[in-house]
Image (cartoon, rainbow, N blue to C red; front, side, top):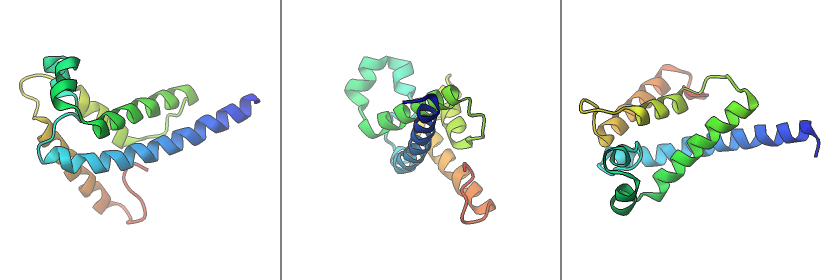
Amino acid sequence: MGRNQQIENLELRLEQAKKEFEAKLRACLPECARGRWGLFGQHERNHGAEFAKKYYSWPEAEKVVALAEEVRTLRETLVDTSPFPLLERFFYLRSLDGPQVPAEPKLALQLLQQMKREEQSVPSDRAFWT
């Protein structure tokens, strides 16, 4: 397989991973906003990975995080500097730490509200992160 084919394969995987990330995040956000923890990693930071895995296991959220990491890695590999605000916002919310940070359900609700506002402010055939 030539270098051009490898790059094409990585670009295709990047587009697939971005779409899958968006879809899975959209599916998890309402559940998180209703009180399920695990999407933004707060328990893992505060209590350790073993505690979080034992008491707050959420495979769908773990898949969202894995996809986000894959997208970030592929973008770095391909030197993709195009904007992807949804991914950037997700990583920003996951990085928040400290006593003043809202709980995960509130973060999820904030992100859902932001997404809704952005969708209403752009033509209906485009979402704000595309």
